[in-house]
Image 1 (tube, one colour):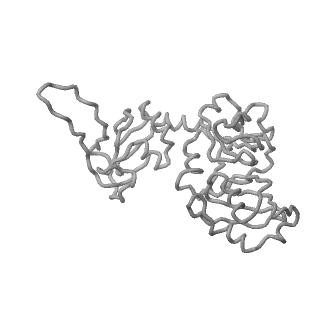
Image 2 (tube, rainbow, N blue to C red; image 1 turned 60 degrees about the horizontal axis):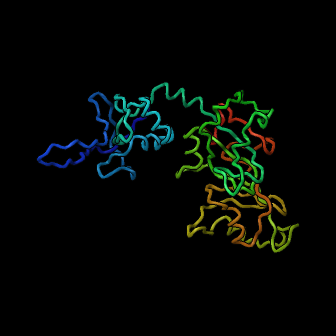
Image 3 (cartoon, one colour; image 1 turned 90 degrees about the horizontal axis):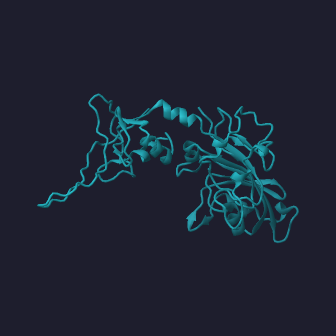
Length: 307
């Protein structure tokens, strides 16, 4: 149950008039407040709202972290969502930011059955849809590849493959931790526009043909440039942590995930990436999970530290 606030306004769809009666066009439904519904103080207008201050219910539910927009649409169609105590079952319904949104227990129960899977992706698999004859990493999620030391207590079911999608990319020639999830909340937490979850990588590099003791030959000021000062696609990159892990390997910690970002960053300073492995996403470590194997995210295991 969530309650936020905004300026109450109502929009009306204009209808054309003619002498001959015409079939009325359907109008977008808006959720009307009830007199008993509690109200909060006015909040700043949402940038996603229309000129009346209203926005789609599914968008609002996603913004509040209740579920993904896709899940919201499913729940609305099933009548699992109430706005100011009124059941909403019409897609496209718009709400004001101050209206109270309730999720029925059946929706919560459905959400609790969704799983998140961690894969140690090998080279040669793509994160998402198949491309250039390469298979997606989801094909690794089979009973045979289930890590025998998985202590989640969750038994594999084929329903766990339904709507399983990657929450972030990992390049075809990179290895390590890849998250696949059915839970829109997890996906938004990891790859939403406002995500602050960091990701850690170990990156083996060459420099001007030098393959050993690269650290001694590589200019220190360029490491500072990797940390802050580079741009990709005409956009400045967010500050990163970049440091030598050993003479041939760098440690990167990023809070964003542009396509082939680390490889492109290294190219800009004259480094060649010869190996890249993701070892952590937020507070979740790759740990001892073998390459090509997978496990479930445990109950209570989260990508961000809870207060």
